[in-house]
Amino acid sequence: MEFIKEEETEDIEEQTGTGSGVTSEFFNLNLSVCENANCLNIWVHSSEAVRTRRERKIERQRG
Image (cartoon, rainbow, N blue to C red):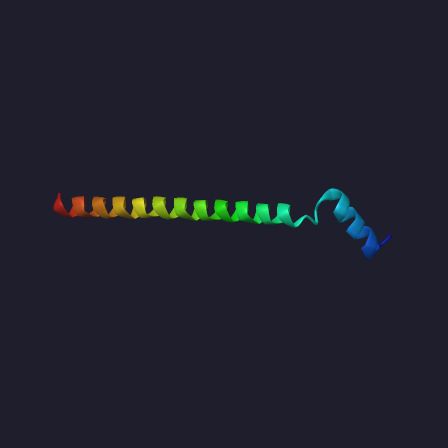
């Protein structure tokens, strides 16, 4: 099994763009936006479900 030298790894990163800070930061920002949107979506839908259950409980108590 051969080990890659550190200099060779740096050359590969330069060629493939994996060391690009701009791309990495854009990906992280995009991921953060998606995570926040997903959290908001879950929060909105869960609060609707709680409200609906509460309304059904009140209707049962009245009826």
